[in-house]
Length: 448
Image (cartoon, rainbow, N blue to C red; front, side, top):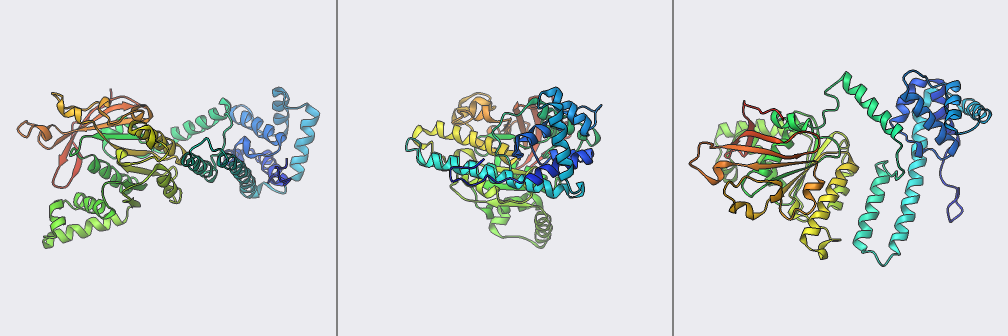
């Protein structure tokens, strides 16, 4: 097929044949292929049908992929008649030099597929650019989404058949049964919270809500350090309220157990310097990236994240905080609509980049007028669709913030108000205001 400029669309006949032929020669290699290619990555329809039939055979543990079973499967599915199927399979096998170079064949097929996707994205961007009825900011946002989708190999708008999804889920379950820790996701390393969340997984959008002074920034920074140091994850922190240096100072105070007032004043004794050196050495070993840009958008954050190596499927993103962000495409529609659009965009970003995203959020002032002052999801400020977009909503509450005389001094509650993947409940934690540090209590509550 040629485009409007009569140029042949990119594809490699021999590479597509060699991928399928390699699987027929060595069926065990299908798992290597299916992890990198989808049916839509093949250009020729006959190759799409053949790959789909291989998928079906791979799902059936009682059958192996070979020329006979593949022919039978394609005939049963009504893809083509037996003679045509046998002929195509023989052509493919004869065109395959060796299965040893399968990875190279796969890479060629994927590259050609991405080029075709880029051409399709460019065509759509071209059409959008001529549409005066659409906001230019919305057009730019859509253009960025299209290009990011291609760059991440995810530009596939076709409906997915359940059999393809079943294969992926089945493979994941088999791997998980062999190694239960393999797909735990990103842990907070707060046992009580991890019991509820069972790890923060790729695509998860998690809201941490609290009134000012409750410690939401400290809470997410504690999680960031735990994930980076204990979990060996790549953590990206976007702070719209504090500079990069202030974030690092806060983390040094927590790790070194030196009051933040001492760090700000510079009045450190020799013992403090020793602790500071140890803390700095530990943090330096963490793969933590920090951005302190005061004004930013989801598009700018996504552009920066797209350049971070090792983030996809092995990282964590933290944004502090939601209400300080802007969306130029929605500003004229009111603040509630703007915040709702930002919330939705952050959820989509988490899904596209395949990372969990934690975002801090302010709570409404009206909470202060209630008797108990214990937050609920209804208190999310300018909420709109925030609670709908979030996979989990964690609300922080410190009783001693409102009553210094009561018996729960330096205690904090993490209220799991929403949990799409599990139960809701409450976790009691210790809070050390000197070092802005949350830590676990011994009486960890199990999810109900």
